[in-house]
Image (cartoon, rainbow over the protein chains, first blue to last red):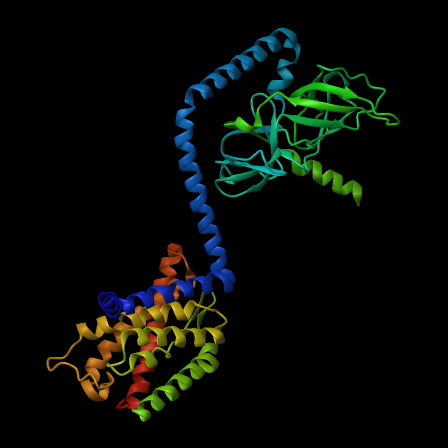
Length: 274
Length: 173
């Protein structure tokens, strides 16, 4: 006990100093806006760095699976090229001279949740790579979500698995009648397609794709297949359950689709509104 | 003993009020480079009697800084800087110990140990204090060039004023 007292007497100044500096730090961060902003952004940079480091490690262990999925995607793309060569040779010139409307940026998922009401993903690319807010995010097999916030090197994506998701979609052969794709279940692989009028024929097994009528998603991106379809009594529209083609819980690499015409379209809309 | 406490209480109130009400409004600088501060409240810690226990000096440093912070509306910034300065005060005193040693009953003033000695003592102390203050104020090493510039300009102004005050009053305690 005596020793303890002596230690405190000798180093008490240092302990008090350290303690008071911590108090100051707390006061500075909580009562000063400027320093608080610096604190928050430093913290974000740090956690972003940590997340990415952990992710690097886990990516290493799943390399073989990723390889597999990339090879499969390659195959699908090759298939697409070959088929296009056969079916649409007459259009080649106009494609060559055409304008680029969508820019595709590939990115890696750093964090991802699926078990909340509002799920988000974090990507390792941001405005420095050309990503803009409100861009669509897809992977090789389906939709992932929509970019919400962008910093220089990171971006936050609102997952499809979000209670506010509302994406224009329809079954493949009825593109002109878009319904809205929403997430009502707690299941990360099931979504609902609403507002498809009942005079349109929908069958279990039909493919669900984007309509292209939104600014964000290009047309005919694969979403999933119809697993359940009913028309409730007295209702005018189908109630459709869609099984997602991709697995959002396990997504590693994604493509961000930036619509280069977005500003133009919004400007037009504004002019009409005025 | 009582007069010593009285002196220090008056000194504390005077310095904090002058700093908080008058010197706060003095900003020197030009448009692209905001004001330099004139800081004189560290005189209080500078002139505390040498026999004051180290923890008490540190606590008084915190208290003085916090009082100034209330005027500057920057809770914790001055306090963090002066707490550190108060913590290093004994180290500076040890470095500058005169050949005859200190008399622990006295305050480290120019009256006791000479103007040259006090010049070094106040200079080192104020430089550390100014740098810490502007570093904490920026809160990031990102603006290190700005921090150094502010430190140097403010240090020169404050140091000049502190030396002037010391010569003017030439306090014994």
